[in-house]
Image (cartoon, rainbow, N blue to C red; front, top):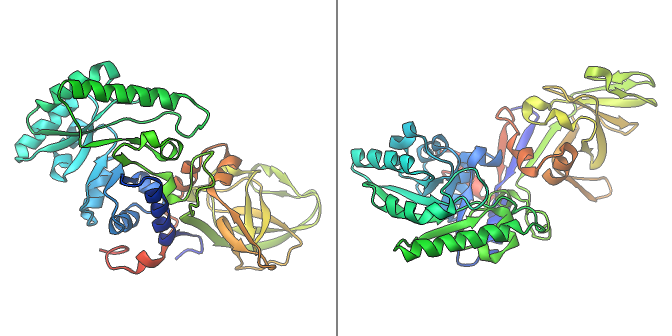
Length: 382
């Protein structure tokens, strides 16, 4: 195994789910595991969440959901982007719940279900302001009636998605919420009721209890991060990323480091090389801003980040070949103080969001799973 490893703490995952459960008592949890569980390992995370009693899992793709079925996931799985016509048979075969975003898609699902002698379960997706997919509010009630009449279709839920849930100062969430509630009333007026009602992603879940309905859809919070304004939540980051020093050299004033000579040494120093780069998902735009931990102390990542390596200026510190380098996570200093770098801080360095930081850690970085659930049969291997 490479010395560069992403460690996935399943105890932290279990803890975060408990925090979410306590914040949303009595609500079902749809755990989002799309995009390789935000980089954490979709199959292992999904098995762990199933073992913890999560009611449903959410993917973006039919292909993702099929992989989960093959990996032994038996709880309901919802695909939260529109299913394409050529995917309908597979979606029905694997008992996937899909979002109803337009009538032609629903009819294709119905035809697939009838051909297989089954029923396809769908949730009415209402576009309350994201303008990405779904029925317009003024069309939703009539669409619900039409969907109910399609052979092979069971309309069991209604949902929407908030555009500004991560911004506690934006009033738009409440405008969308009001629209969604009005659509539900219109649907009820024509006889359409829903067993499942859901809207709350991570941001909305913390921001407003009114968004919880019957089910919440946490993503980033499962993996240890709350939305802005909710940092006091006692969530624990699930992923850490660490490597080791593989090369060391002294450098003198006027010498430069890495491609483009973007970093010039100003005083005699030691430059160390770490085998992590943008090929591993440690993005190049962190050049000139990122820091790492060695022996619990912070040091700057210097020079252009390469595809496979990066360089660190450690000054005259007492570091050695093989020393651990933490890029994401925690490390203890010599005085016992715990220092840390989390995805929120890295996202600020890269002018992006924490979702992107964990999601882009590439498949060539091995994942090592730890914690109680990692020892349970069927979690890491089938």
